[in-house]
Length: 521
Image 1 (tube, one colour):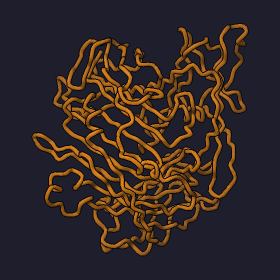
Image 2 (cartoon, helix red, strand yellow; image 1 turned 90 degrees about the vertical axis):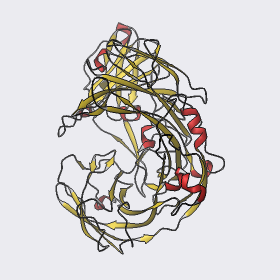
Image 3 (tube, rainbow, N blue to C red; image 1 turned 180 degrees about the horizontal axis):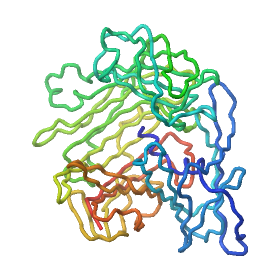
């Protein structure tokens, strides 16, 4: 989900780092100082005391090294609880890492990550993870669920959603009421509904285990249109046609421990969830105003309002977040499209889960433009976005407006490159530079490089590099560029999550992104 992407990749790096420790020269012999990072997770299991857990991280990464002053320093696990990079020269360095390609999907090559900082010792800052440690998981296909629940929600529509969620196993997945195969649309029963089990979360395709105290929930999200029958001025208002998904009923499920490769039965009884209405004053015009600095004449705009359950209460903890409400307002297409403007949205939400947490809001907008890939018939959609995240109780106290504007004046090798432009012959190591946002004060920037592959006339952007830094200029490494292909860069400003911390202590987070046009070596 979108919120998770706002957290620094370092929070994962410090958990899964590779390399066995070998004999090396001491810092006193080689100069420089070590950089050290603990690899200890603190878990908060359901209805249990917190537990610390250390795991040999070496299988998780193909690359783990630091670049500094022309030197490459490998990361070494100390056999206990720490990753060490020995003899790192003083000042800023670049931490480079890449997760391993999944064995069952060789095409899913992970992007390289660069984390630029001068921090010498990373602290855990009370980092806490939702659920328990040592959750068994599977990466193979063939594991499924057989869902039975009563009474089935009435008057199911094709757009309705079901969600399966476990706090303790830290996993979540969705299923449409119409999955094109055996969904429970007609005659309106949920009896032995067979679905694939491929959830998202920190534990792969986790095998939820009732004998270990795991919970499992089946939640029903009713689809509706924000204004059922628009009339008058509502007819030309994009908000009238917004798609709304509201959690309406939930069932705590009973189940035996899940078995890899088997069809696992889960059963439960739905209970209606009483809703709480919270008005949110979404200022779409304000979001459009700041985003047009990146994409001057956008062709499309979408505004999103999400309400979800963040696992932490007094401060955030890391874990999947079940949705309570999701709202999407899309442009009305035309020669001159009508964009979502200002609107007070009555958000209906509550949550049934006993694990606790913070009801959190996420709102904002993104604009886009379709650009042609030269020398092909393919097109790619370039996007600029601005979003805010906070406790719903705080977000509802004032109009929801952007807190950050996108980084400005994105340049490649010193030349402005707006989304409508294309540049050739930039070399294999182009320099990306930009100005800080005019609105807000970001903690750091994320620079994402995408190479655009074209297959059968379809553009397929592939992220090759993600670089996180407090600097406003970086020179891309040659190995990140794909000769012959067009590329583009998205630069995202982030506030509320300082770059040097592996854990944020606030629910108040903002992001805003800008995008370049296409360029190639």
